[in-house]
Amino acid sequence: MAMDLSSPYSPARSPATLAARCGSPHLVLRRPRLATVRCSVDAPKQVQVQGRPAAVAAEQAPAARKECYGVFCTTYDLKADEKTKSWKSLVNVAVSGAAGMISNHLLFKLASGEVFGPDQPIALKLLGSERSLQALEGVAMELEDSLYPLLREVSIGIDPYVVFEDAEWALLIGAKPRGPGIERSALLDINGQIFAEQGKALDAVASRNVKVIVIGNPCNTKLDENRAKCQLALKAGVFYDKVSNVTIWGNHSTTQVPDFLNSKINGRPVKEVIKDTKWLEEEFTKNSSKGVLIEKWGRSSAASTAVSIVDAIRSLVNPTPEGDWFSTGVYTSGNPYGIAEDIVFSMPCRSKGDGDYELVKDVAIDDFLWERIKKSEAELLAEKRCVAHLTGEGNAFCDLPGDTMLPGEV
Image 1 (cartoon, rainbow, N blue to C red):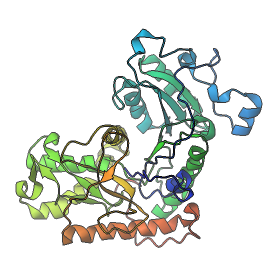
Image 2 (image 1 turned 30 degrees about the vertical axis):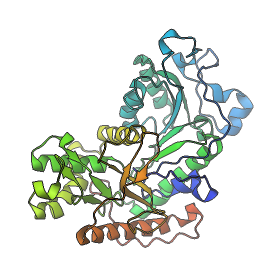
Image 3 (image 1 turned 45 degrees about the vertical axis):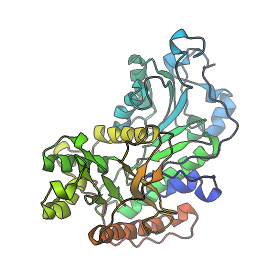
Image 4 (image 1 turned 90 degrees about the vertical axis):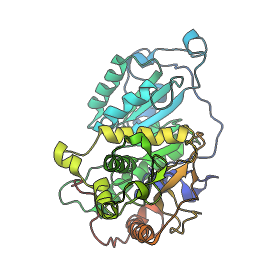
C-alpha cells in the first residue's frame, strides 16, 4: 500500500493533499500535538448514534463526540480492571466505508487482536454515509455479539469531523466503485475528491501521529504483492512461506511491475529456481494482475483485500525479518532508484516495527525491469496531472495514454 511518512509535517504534505493523490494509497505520520488517549469512556447510558452534520450535532448534541454504540457505552477503566493491567494504551482506529464488504471482513480481524496484538485494546470509529447508516448499526451490533475483550469502544457516524477525532490509524476504504462507462480519469477525480475531504477532516481532528492508509479504488493494496507470491509459489511447487523479497513496483493497474529479478524462493533467486524466462516475463506479470477472481466470483475481492490490509498494517507494526522486505506505495521524494519525485509509487520497504518504514537500497534493476518501471512511472505522472485541481498544483489536465484499469474492475 502506498504510504507517506514524511516528517516534519508541512502544509505541502497535508493529509488533504496526500489523500487526493490516489494513484496509490498512502500512510501519513503527523507531528505530535498535546493530546491524551482516553482509556475510559464517559458516555451517556442510552444508545445514541452519531452521524449528524457537524453544525447540527454541535447545536443539538453538545456531547456528540463522546457518543458510542450499545454495550460500548458502558463506562470502564482499564487501570482498575485486573484483567487489563498488562494491556497497552487504547488505540483509536477509524475506518471509512465501514458498512462495505471489505470492512465486513476487516473489522473483526481488527477487533480480535489479530492485527495489533493480543494485548492491544482498540476503539473502532466507523464512518458511513446517510444511505448506509442503518447497515452501519448492524455492523456495530455484530461487533457487540462477537464479545471481543479487546474491543473497548465502537462509535458510528457519517460526519468525518466527528468520527475521525483522535484517530491514530485511519483506513480509508469507502470509495466509489468503477461502474459501466466510467473512465479511469473520472474515477480518479471522483474518489480523489472523497479522499481529499476526508484528509481535511483528519487534518482538523485526528491525532498528529495518525497513519492513513488509502485503499479505495484505484489505489494500490498489498493484495498485488500477495498475488505475486502466490503465482511464484504455485510455479515453483512450494508453499507461500518459502517466497520472499517480492516487490510490486509502480501503480495499481496493468502497468504494475511484479519484480521476479529480486524475489527469492527458499533463499535462492527466483531465476535460479524457475528457469522459464518466458513465463516470468509474460505470464507471471499477467497472472499477478488479471481479474480471474472477478470472473469466477462475479465481483471484486473482499476477504483477500481485507487480509492484505491486515498484512500491510502488520508489516509496519512488526519488525521486517532480516534480509526480507515488503512492497508498499510511498512518496518517491529522495528515493535511491531514480524514479520521478513527488508521486506515490510502490517500492520495496523495511520497518523496525515502530509504524515507520525505510526504503530498501540494495535492489538490482536490469534493463527489462527498468523499462517497465518507467512505463508505470509515466502513467502515475499522467494520473497526477488528472487531479492537479485537488492537490493545489493548478488546473487538471488528463492525458492518460489509455485505459489501464485492471481487468474486472468495470
